[in-house]
Amino acid sequence: MQNRSNAHERRWSRHGWNNRVSLYLIRTLAPRIPHPFISLTHWLMTAVCYVAMGHERRASIANLRQICAEDGLRLRRRSFSLFYNFSRFMVARMEMKNLPEQSITERVVNLPEARAALERALALGSGAVVATAHLGNWEMGVRLLKLSGRKVHIVMMADGVGDIESEYERSRAMEGLKVHWIGEDPFVGAELLSALRDGELVAVQADRNAGAACVTLPLFGAPVQLPLGPATLARAADVPILPCYVLMEDGHHLRLRIDPPIQVRRTSNAREDLYQATLELSRSIEAAVAERPEQWFNFYPIWEKTCTQP
Amino acid sequence: MTREEIKETLREMIVQELRLEEITPEEVGDDLPLTGARLGFDSIDILELIVAIERRFGVRIRDGASAARALESVNALADFVLVNTQEKLS
Image (cartoon, rainbow over all chains, first blue to last red; front, side, top):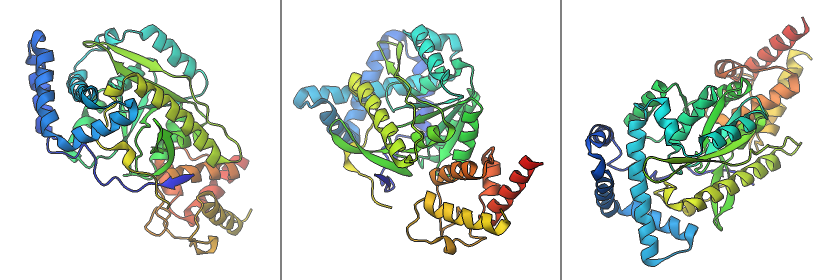
């Protein structure tokens, strides 16, 4: 059931536009655009990217077809919306580090309920593995986790786009978040285990395999490889997995979706324990994505790969 | 447990816990780097190994730096277990 994955041959983020110049342009130009023209600018940028990025466009259409079982113009519109939402996400991501805490919390339409759900979940264990997906404004979600008053660690997959990664890492460090890169340091798990035992939060994106141990599970009716890391870490530290997503609403507004915590069993059959917890997490991801399929930012064919044997 | 017994237990644990099929406990040399090319453990392997060692010997590996030192090799692990179990007893 548990396998080693093949390395990702092509990451969608490795395209010519994902560079420091693009980030600089977004960061400097976006705030100068008069408010009435923001939507129009997003639309124009989306149209340019949608036409120019053939690989990503075709992959998004294939993914959305699997999720929504749609075709034709309706599917194309949804795919265009995905690109449009990604444009909104990138601008929000760049402006985020300059925003005071109050401006961020004001954007969340269900903050009191979300806060209460977070506190209930954290009462179950010393820390928590907060599992999210590349859905909506997940980057803002990480900042919102700081409202719990606990130290937040982020586990990221090294993308191979070095200058972009260092740019994001600098920005997250400024926000008081500690970033750990998978694949660079084999002892990162020990560091995270220690953090969880100290009551801190570890945020992971559980919808993409990071190139280590994974399991093949059905997602929207077809097999996909999902990482076993979140369940392994939660089981080791005896803390819950808390599925948490930040969905983008109209304008700047955000809505937090916090699903019930997943308790990883600790029986003598560790394989089965990890499988069951990851299966439960996959159902949460599926339900969250089904709510906003055009906010699940995967621009590569998700259902193309399966785990290979070690 | 003597140092030799600890090392033997550790070699067996490494092979069993990480389900290594192409290597026997005897082939895990005392100074073989656990994260080197021969074994090539990744972060999840290391995490599983840490939990197994903590449970088996009742010791606690506190952070990444301690893990890096302790999990250098079977010899380093045995030293870590010996020192920490003695500390607990004293």
